[in-house]
Structure formats: C-alpha cells, structure tokens
Image 1: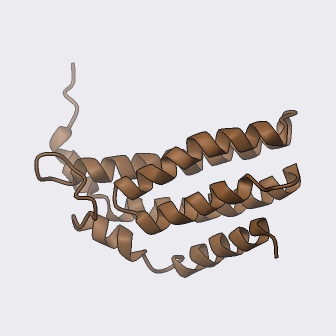
Image 2: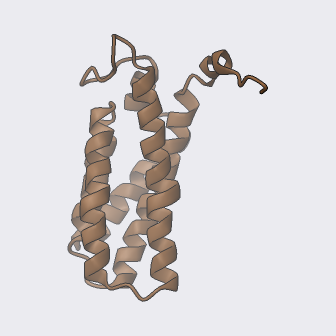
Length: 158
C-alpha cells in the first residue's frame, strides 16, 4: 500500500471516528486544558480564537482553494507540493500550538503524503480526504467555542 493510500485511509477513518463524537483534544481545549498552556494572561479564549481561525482557513480557504485551482487551472504537481509543504505544514504546527497535537499529527501525515504523490489525481484524492477531515474538525472547534462571550462586544450604532 502506498503512503498516499495509507494516509487517505487514516484521514477517512479519523473523520468517521469523530463524526458524532467530539475529539477529546477539542473537548479539552474548549474547557481550557491546553497541553502547551497556550494563551495570554492566564486565559485561553485567544487560543480558541486562533484554533477556530486556523481550522476554518485550512479547510474553507486553503484546501478548498487548492482543489478549485487544481481543477480549473494548469498547475503542476511540484508547485502544489511545495505550497502544501510550506503553508499546510505551518498550520499543522499551529494546531499543535493551540492544543490539538493529534490533529496536527494527522495534518502532518497529509503533508508528508502529498510530497510523494505521483500524479495530480493522487494529490487531489489525498486533498479531498484532508478537507473532509478538517471540515469535521472545524465543526467541533466551532461547537466548543464560547460564542456567548461575544455578546459583551456589541457594535455601537454610529
């Protein structure tokens, strides 16, 4: 079995595992249990804000953008691999920083597998599995986010 096939199976299995059950690391993050103790001045709200933003931009902007561009533009595999290595690799590290080390590990596996993809079709199959997993992860981060806190920041009519 190739690394690409292996990682697609891992991404799909993890997405299915968390489909109805919030990942423990996300539950912990929502309760302020952050392994790296990320956050400023003894609070973790900023950590949740960063986690939500990073998960959203990875799925809704970056991975979606890669799929769209790959299907509509003439992009070569080597360029796509370099972009994923640089940008998604950084986001994986950031997932670890905000309290999701298991998610970070799986995103790093995606990055690793993209580097050995031998065709654009293989790369896209891998990226589709990644976006499906990251979208579900993002949904859980949204679910633990304390959206009610934002009621303290109502806009003032000018």
